[in-house]
Length: 130
Image 1 (tube, rainbow, N blue to C red):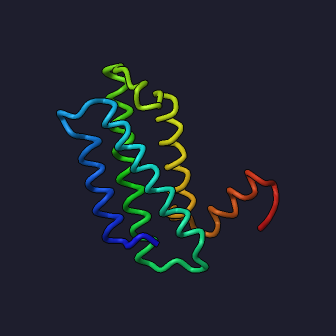
Image 2 (spheres, one colour):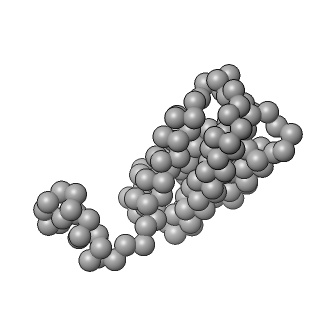
């Protein structure tokens, strides 16, 4: 797995670029998409581990949470200002879809569900017991 400290520092640096006051919209979008890619890499690393260590899970949780926070802020700014972000290769819709994907990744790995809640979801979604 990417070393936790490096992943955290990289995420923090990218977050600064996403929310930089003087950065262009395109640069902000590209920086956030780089954060999304980092989250995917971290998630792939966790999937490759039989039993991920607590430190890897904590890094994954923190980086995802920061990326979700930055993405929500960025989308709000794009919706409010309606800038041209086409040079980034993204649209408002792809940003929203990426944010939703991150939220799903976060909930699937870090949700604090009890056994009863989890069973209720299984019943509702799959109509079957575990």
